[in-house]
Length: 299
Image 1 (cartoon, rainbow, N blue to C red):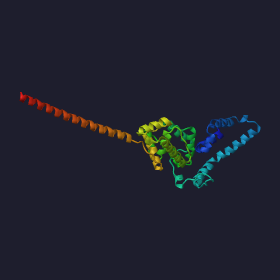
Image 2: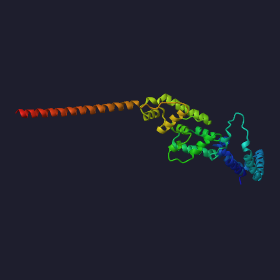
Image 3: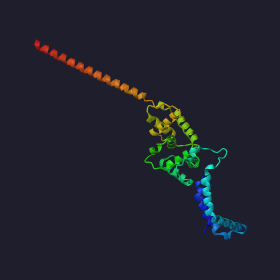
Image 4: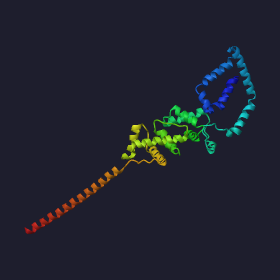
């Protein structure tokens, strides 16, 4: 009934929403496009002169295309399956290792669905990801297996956020969860550098060794930098920096130990003093008893 609209919707469902570049151009305009296609289909009589003729030719061409679609569409699909892996990379484009290109997570190819997954996870665990950051992650996921896997893992069910940390990329997840402001890069190697530099700068400024306890250090970081670190994410940060060759000293507990030693010495001293007093009292008592016995004999 509406060949133009039907063809457009089929194209959008198969190709348009699965291509980030195409989808970004259509996003927010889909309603207007459908509206005008309906107008052009339902009210061709209102299109004057040349436009009416052009419309007729367009409809005819699309009708021919639709008639041969049972042949054309399978041919395109087969061509993609046979030649898809032989595409040459343009100069300056990112080239990934063959084994990475072959990997797949089974994640949906749909751009809006990938965005929806991140938005839902972002809201559930308060990651404070902005729309620009979400879009950048989604776009990157089409050329980076690592980013694609991050979205796939966001689509899993977790009993708590600590299950989500159980990953080789726990450094990234601790960063997204604990820091109020992020820098997101489409290049995953660069993302790792950003996180390392952020963690290292934070601990250089805070100097954890100057604190008497880890809890005190974490509380001070959260208050000063508006982070939401806990012991788990702090230790993820600390171990990640260690693995990168960035060594920081943990909070110093020597002061607490020193105080404990003083308490122990004081306790021993009190016990010794009490023992001496007790011994003196016994000795005095025995002396008093002896004197009393002498007095009785003299009388």
